[in-house]
Length: 211
Image (tube, rainbow, N blue to C red; front, top):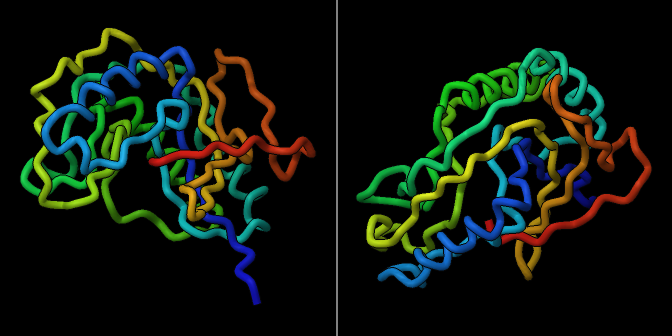
C-alpha cells in the first residue's frame, strides 16, 4: 500500500530581489577549491527552514495550520542581515555551506513559536536546537575543504521576514521538488498571501531545488 504521507517543512521564503545577489555569492564560492564538491542550491529555491517536519499525514494539515497560526499570531515582521558565510556544523567536518543570519533572536523566537504549534498539533518535538542560517549548498564529501573566506561573500542586502510557508518536498531522480501548500504565518503589518492549501483549491506551483 503506497505511503500517503507528505514530506514537509515550514520555512521563510527568500524574496526574488535577493536571488541575484545570493547567486553571485554562490558563483564565487563555486569557483573556490572544493566548490565542485558542493551541491549548490538554486537561487530561486532558497528558503530559511524554521522546522523540518518529516513525513506527515495530510489530514493533520488543517490542525497544524491552526495551531502554528495561534502561536505565531503576535509576531511582527522583521529584517535579517546575511552576515557571513559559514560551514556547518563545524569547520573541521562541514556538511552545509550557509549564510549566518543576524540578529538571530527574532528568527529564533519565531522558530520556537512554530515549534510550539507543531507540538500542539500532535507531532513529535524537535530535540536539536534551532540555528539561524540560510543554506547555500550541501557538501557531498564530509571531509572536503572549502575556503569560504577566500571570496567576497559580503552582502549589504537585508532579508525581510514577513511570512512562513508550509512546503511539501518530493524527492525525485531529477532532484527535490518543493511545493508551497499554505501560509502558516503572516506578520500583522504584512499583506497576507493566498497559496494553494487544503483550504484553497488553486493548483500549487512546483519548485525544483537542489537544496
